[in-house]
Length: 201
Image (spheres, rainbow, N blue to C red):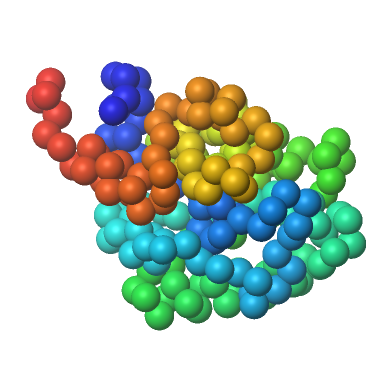
């Protein structure tokens, strides 16, 4: 499943960073943006997967680029409203996200647009015990995987719908430590691996 370095990271895993669109919910075609919760379509098995991460004692943090704000298509408050509704829906399924962070900028305007590390630093400011070495980044795009890779975190590429992948998806797949079709399948494998007896013990 992973080499010894990644196995060590999974065994000491404390925080799971998740991209949003394409991981938690159905991604819209390239160039289109989710502007309201009515357009937000959760993917099958997502609340159950997040609930399992919660029960395993892992912190679950969403980090997403929201370029549509910079383009004037929706506002930061719109994104917060979507996340609030998502949180309520997850809680109704016995799951929760510990924190949401998003970048409202266009490219080359900030240090928080993935793959730059600003969203990780925002999370660590709120949760000082977060460390890259005990964190995992799960995403469906090259920027997600580069984000985790640059930090030194284990990375998981979600293959998702082949028709909706962003350019660079194949490079992301090659760069990622692990690949799975969906978040539920990634969660199953990661938790099973994390709980397995240490062969060196």
